[in-house]
Image 1 (cartoon, rainbow, N blue to C red):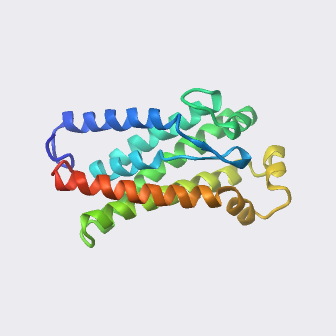
Image 2 (image 1 turned 180 degrees about the vertical axis):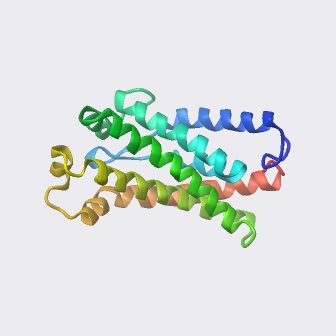
Image 3 (image 1 turned 90 degrees about the horizontal axis):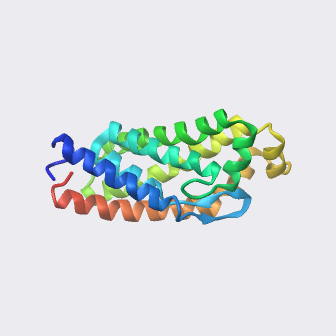
Length: 200
């Protein structure tokens, strides 16, 4: 493949197809956690797309991640217990919460990479892009969850009288740390390898 940032359409489409296939596989690899949430590594392909193809690539693969996440509400490409409960409340708001937040994560990850790429070496730049992709995913997913569904009986039961901050910290504390560390290390290694091979 030629340089993906400036190369041909075939190389870009090939990478998009590979990352989409990886997201489908990762859709079945979630590690369930309390409260219907799970540890997921789906932000790694989003971060790699953001690195290789900038904002457009990040948005496309972020959108694929969001679509898979929404389909999991119906038991397709994995299963999300929380998603199933929320889609029963409002399919439209569930789609907005799961899809739009992931598209935005891809865009933000690309902007982070763009801001860092002239300041840091390839490994650190890719590592931090992976870290921030996972961080943005947690922040946007949880904030949109509370904003869109916070007043529903389902969410009030989960929150059990806790403040929003306390609920988010209790819900995703371990998830967020694991996701950010794994996304950082893997994205750093893969991104640096692709850079060294002049594929991006």
